Image 1 (cartoon, helix red, strand yellow):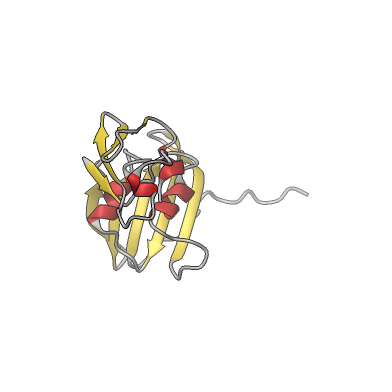
Image 2: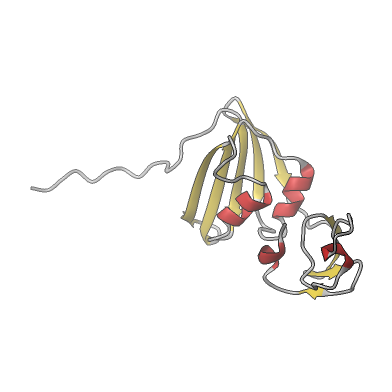
Length: 155
């Protein structure tokens, strides 16, 4: 017996209010959640799709967060791992605002310095500070440079 082939449709249903983060590089959706402080213990209602077919890039991840609109600082943090992401603010099932991501020139309290001797890793109450230069991050205090695997240093 031959069964009916299901029609292709939306994998994730639309949200009434919230944020849709689209065009995340494949495999980075869970890092985006980490940047936003979303864990299994938080109360957000989420939809996460990974390795979704994309006409533009071939493959992408998508994150939908109901009842939460991202702040500009959060959007800019996402740029660290998803510089081509698009952020849509949804209100009453419609796109109310589109935000583009921009890599900030300075990051404070976002990245942990890999240098264990850096003052930002001591018991002093000093937040980490980094200057963003051509895709690399330079520590404000010890000049240590992070050139790759930035995700592993996100606080």
